[in-house]
Length: 126
Image (cartoon, rainbow, N blue to C red):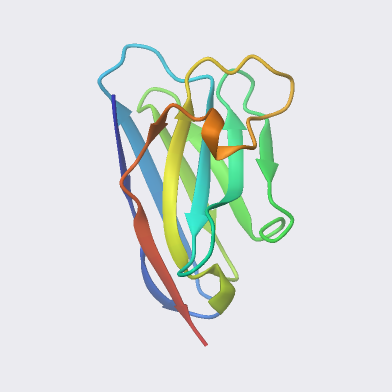
């Protein structure tokens, strides 16, 4: 299984970017997909997740109301639309899959995820 992330770049504060992550190498979709980010000198943190089956979405408080996670089932792709970007959103963003998640919430711990993309850098300048 490979996760290919794209869409990062440099924007000014208040701008927008859309990240994409496409999975390949498997005939079925993972149960849950998520975006994490890691800023320089900081630990990787949860950003947003989506349960593939029913489309339920979840967000970290820091991005709620600004970021939107969505999916394209036929393309096996998850998106992260990021609006009203702030300098503190600067980080490498990683997509991840939890193949067999069966809970009623979402897998919030990075250790629960089975596959990871290579990361895409988002830089927000003030």
